[in-house]
Image (cartoon, rainbow, N blue to C red; front, side, top):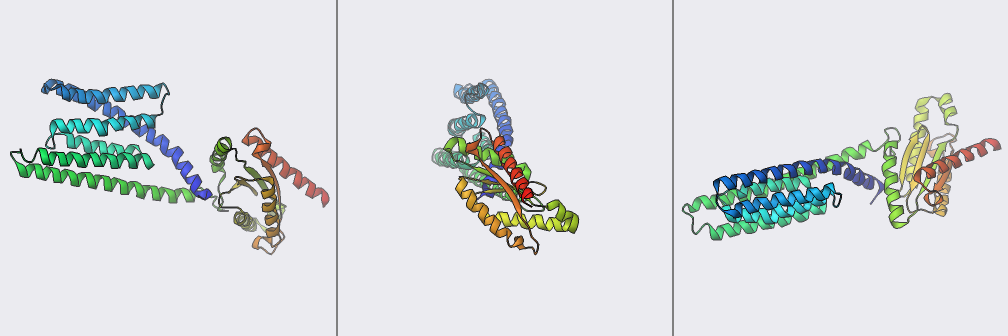
Length: 346
């Protein structure tokens, strides 16, 4: 997986999780209220205790899981998963058995289907969705064998089963296609917004996400990462002598030059002004030296410009420091020392 896709996945996970948490809370509260109302209705209008037990179980399940979330024993997504398991595989089959296809169970099952598609994503969504659709198929088959032979109005039962089956398939297909389309459009938007408009490398606002990703790998796997800080030599002088348009051309070409020399898993960030930061993943000081030699060689061709361009750089490894911030500061310090050393030689 390349660096761009990694950033998109992390960004979406962080922001989608927050939105999904809110949606899960709303749906769970509405489910608890609806099931509580169901208990009241069944107590008033029906004498069968199975109706009450069916809804009471859902309320108890929701209450227990929400308490566990408040106690931080489980996260909200896990609680939502357990509650949805009860609703899909216990509530709906029991409710369907009690009311049949001509009752209200099919309508409730479609509401739960929509909630399921709205609350989850990825492998969890696929597992729940296909299992739930399998349960609904079995319930339709059960109704066909149990209710059609004894129905007073056979065509009505047949039409209801057919309409219900079509509605379930169309609802699931439509929502999945919309979710996929939204995901594709969002990916396209994120790829554009991640890039600095001038240089087309990653912008500064993504640096925190990159560091979080690398830091998590460092703590989990022990893999090292290295910050390489670049600064264009005499950039202010070039701007003053040739104008800002020329300076922009220099920035674009240097960024392109650096970007062509990194690996697909590395990150190139415009740190600010004429400074660029390369985050090398799973790297070593020896591999950084080889990388910098390629950069120096590329600079000999003036990065596609007929003027002399050079860069100064400093780098530091995560293993040298206690925190990512210290790594940045050390790389910046070594960059400054290299620039001062170059000035003193002139």
